[in-house]
Image 1 (tube, chains in turn brown, cyan):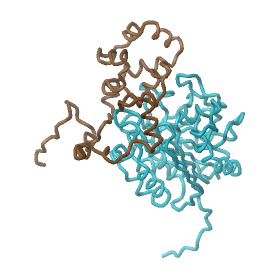
Image 2 (tube, chains in turn blue, cyan):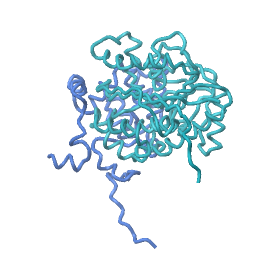
Image 3 (cartoon, chains in turn red, cyan):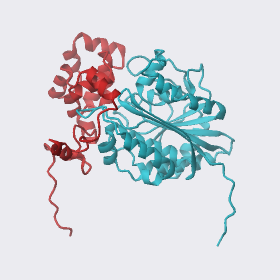
Image 4 (cartoon, one colour):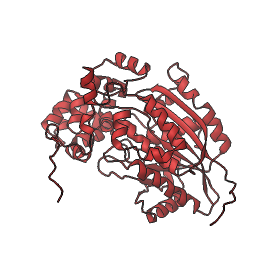
Length: 146
Length: 289
């Protein structure tokens, strides 16, 4: 029998399905587990691909959201347009794009919001070659730099 | 017999499609990107392929979370452009090649690549943006297109190695088709980019350049890059690059690099573009033991 291995401590109750992932800063893995937890959140977003659903959602967002068996956390994140919270609670950015497109927002606007930058600052960062990999490779590297 | 003669790799950034459709191709931001495809447009116009096999990923358009096929093949006669939430792109309907596509599906499944046959499917920017970049804005696309969507949205996507070998199975399938068809395979998506979370906007040009160099000369090395390395080094959405290994596997080991273009930024993304041709083989005399 193999020696009993001490399990790596999952970050906040979650065990990442691949080794090393929990050391990647600022990134959420959309795996099967998150796809399951986020199923109704993402399917709500898909529903916004139809014009009549968009109109119904706009008329009364909270009422429309109650039609989907989502968690309160997910509904609240949608109402507040908290994109990072939607992603942490199982949303995927390609699905969320249906929501922000119906808000008239671009990928770049939402990416800026998720990073805590203004759209101008974010666009400027991209024009200068994007966010550097140096210092952003791992949480440990991140810490070392202070 | 049908043959794959070349591959085209390029990113499929949705904003590129929007720039086309809104007539912004000459603005200072977009002009360098569109100019980067001038050569490619001439090259493919001269090559006149009969069929394009287009490897891409669907972005929650045709496939939601209801059905998540790892590999799928469009076997329909037509594929309409998808409405991605702001109306379908004003591009021609994509004409497929049902007979050839069905042959390919049958051949690769017998070769143990169990793809999903799709007979009804809308195609999103993942497929139509590369067509616009290579063919411009024609009234009809100049050749048949067989869509080959790959799941790279929900983890786990297929490994690089699986994709590389799948490419080889596609080549075998193509070469066992009796009609003389000249085929170009597109592998799209990438390069380094991350669209989510506090690390969004990540670009790693060094990773991208190495990827391009090795894809040409040492694809087996590229095929070994694990998922974690794509994510850590090049951003969560860079995993799309495994699709470039499908097109690479479909070519010969020894290829000629015809053209390369790289530009940052295209919206949130490092745009990469590569054209490879099979070297015309003059079967060398080989000693047999």
